[in-house]
Amino acid sequence: MIALRICTVLLPLLAFVPAQGVGTPAPDAELQGALRRLAEDSAPDELRATLRFLDEKAGVAHARLVPQLLLFKEASRSTREGMVFGAVVDQLRIPEADVVAGLVPLFEGADAARRASLGGVLSEYEDRSIDRGADFDGYRPFLGGELPVGLVRYLYETDADAALLTLTRSRALERAELR
Image (cartoon, rainbow, N blue to C red; front, top):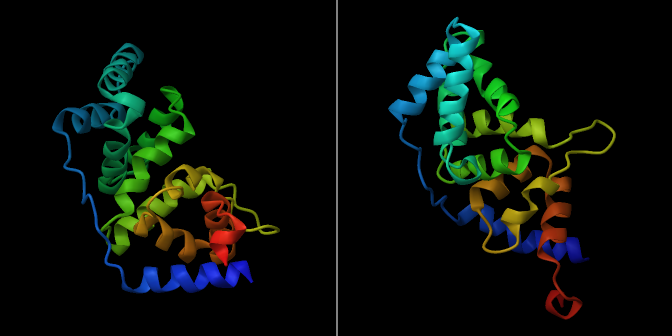
């Protein structure tokens, strides 16, 4: 019963509310150049220096670097360039929460290609299983206040049952509010 009420509230929201976006982040020439250097064959000392540079320029909670990693991945023309995203996340030990926080705002106003790209990267953090749908708990911090429409659309497109469960848990409404 509760799930039905939540669905009747959320589905119209998804259908009629236009995505309000932050838009596409502009490529940062300085960071994009450093990422390109990582993709090239370089000496180990040069690679370490480039990683240090990226770490210094990453911003608070890697907020400046993570969107640039996605832009670089989307523009990649080789397997090696495509692997830079994962290599940087691994080498700089960027926490899962920072990656998710850096990418979730990009869903707002995103076109189909961007949503697919974001979904491909974020699926690594969703602990999906055939036996029990996706685990969207990593998105709960973004669902407690005003709902980000782009993220909610993505969750429902990926796994509607898991999306409903996550939204219900993140909203934690009192019984009186549900009536």
